[in-house]
Image 1 (cartoon, one colour):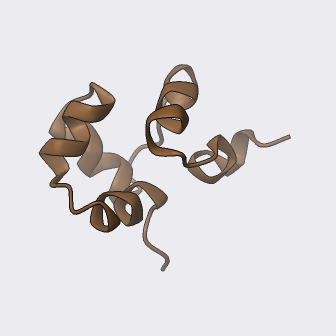
Image 2: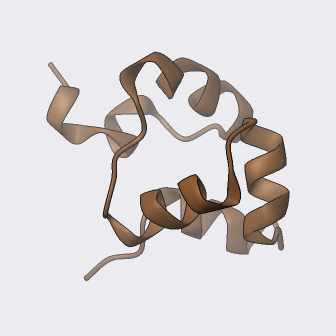
Length: 66
């Protein structure tokens, strides 16, 4: 299984899960759920996440890609 794009970003930037949570203004538990695949980022947050991380929205939520 491939690592979640947010985990790849976090590790490349040497951020802790808590650091990424602060950057994205979500809880540490939310980061854990996203990275594990238990949950997907809410579509309302995609633009902000993409802007802050540089990860295209289609990589974060391929199910929403047109």
